[in-house]
Image 1 (cartoon, rainbow, N blue to C red):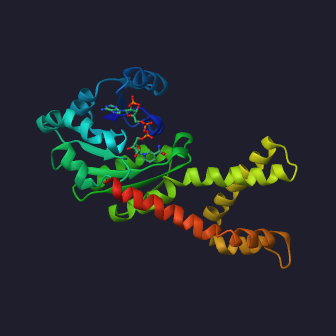
Image 2: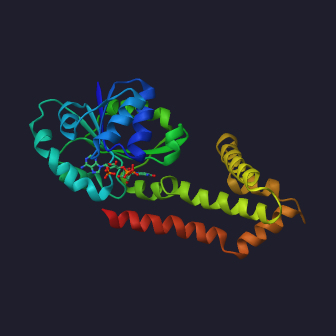
Length: 264
Ligand SMILES: NC(=O)c1ccc[n+]([C@@H]2O[C@H](COP(=O)([O-])OP(=O)(O)OC[C@H]3O[C@@H](n4cnc5c(N)ncnc54)[C@H](OP(=O)(O)O)[C@@H]3O)[C@@H](O)[C@H]2O)c1
């Protein structure tokens, strides 16, 4: 089968690399800047082609351009899609654009899966939220999930929940980067060299996240296990609560969600 990616930027590169590792089909990539597509194709063992060729030949068409360019890009391939005789699937990763809007822009009632990946997908440690519409067959959902598996953890959500979910996992890497930087800054202020401070903070976040997932324990329970009575950690927790840490993080997710819903 042929799997096409229109857009060879950050996410198009990350996901096409993952799909290439699944060895499910031949990968076609395109970009507004053909050189970018050629470099990506060379890296992942795919083929650089035009948007038109992807629209004409791919069994699965991943849309990996920014939401604001989707209308223009899809209007350029509408006619080709309409003329196709065989079945094909559209997979959109555009933040905020609903399945209904993608169909409208693509100009037909095509089967669409909306996904929401994140940047750690580029190293196989991502989260990809998967929301198929009613027209997508079960077997097609399974196939897309299998091809995306090398990107990381796959989570199925309804389309109604996707924007909210994406505000955690899609935007979250930036929130965590700020947290890691801030932890390291605190360490530097207390005398730890910068490089080691970042290593300590990042590995601690990685390990804590893995412990939550592997133990199945609620994060509150794991937090309680580190906070001994009258100890040092609970002093730090008090400082975080004084700074409105949890409320601020909630506000960050809500702000991203609200922006997401406006993009549509
Ligand atoms: N980055 C993330 O963390 C993230 C997370 C979740 C979802 N997403 C979604 O992933 C999609 C891609 O985002 P991104 O971060 O990968 O953006 P990006 O790095 O800007 O990549 C988009 C690519 O599409 C190209 N492009 C623009 N118009 C095109 C056209 N008409 N035909 C072919 N290619 C075209 C751009 O080329 P030029 O640069 O030359 O314009 C660029 O190389 C977006 O819809 C975004 O919502 C991203």
